[in-house]
Length: 425
Ligand SMILES: *Cc1c(COP(=O)(O)O)cnc(C)c1O
Image 1 (cartoon, rainbow, N blue to C red):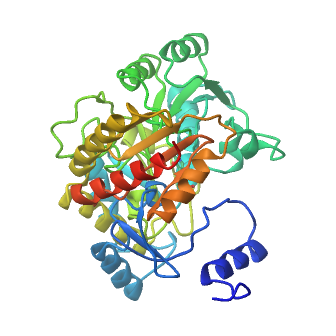
Image 2 (cartoon, helix red, strand yellow):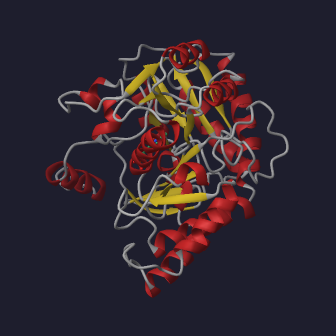
């Protein structure tokens, strides 16, 4: 190939750079096809996907059952808006509510919208059920959280890049240290206006921080004591990713009996997104019981696309796949193998400090400064070696393959990862 002739990949990258807003910094690889745990670039090179679109593609790329549900529904009825009923939404609401053991579901599209919805429900509940003075409600959030990109959500982010020059910010949030039960206790005991506690069961974007053993359980107990809603953002951790149906597995239908390690917690408000559609379509949801969800009345909240028939069909198929293919169990088993093998390697090297995670939501910390580009360079080399992953922050690389992976494939991936890391010793 002549040096002047650009590759198909370079052309696609140039187009995005020239005509798209630069709100991401993608790894330079241009994908055009996916199937199961694999993706292919425009030149035909095959990779293991070790990010799964931030855990949206838990069920694997282009899962036939999900694609069938989507295409069949797309040919039948795609959108009615909520001005009229449709014959799929109720079925889906019943299906998903039973699946996660809540009374009701409120359908939205993206994760950030579902988080916004949960915050609105929480505030309304605070005024109408708890009796907090109007406009005085506070919601506790955690440092280093990631809940999305809307103006309100970034108001309580502490990522300077996510916030800079996007003010003024939404009031009514109190930030405490993650995994610090005393900090939560202190705020709850000293502030009668607290309406809710919004928390990620594992902080994914922050770098896969797993809180200590009893944190969520104790936090839930404190919330109950103070009549405060425990709101779990399981957009990333949910739907089998961490080796259980939910990372806060209160009373779920997960078949995995061997899930000791995470305390049982049933959130008052559950936020789902990403894998709720298996990555086929933007589908998110908020689930809660009647006494909470009843604060939502006609006209108080909505979305043109939320709860559309395609979304409903896709989500039911995506949840079916999770239980039919025992994805929670598989994530649990493969996750243990992954950390065991990585730990075995880490004991022999200075390149990697540690591996942490649950199920197939894991991260390694590279032994270099947060400002270094070592993790980025490792991801470039992983790409060259046929595996796609991306740093979360500076020196942390998240590893989150589709949950449909087999043990043989996982072991192949582990050898690619270790071989690559050895190139950086
Ligand atoms: C991805 C994510 C969101 C936001 O979801 P979008 O669909 O990108 O808006 C919210 N919370 C968590 C924990 C996430 O991982």
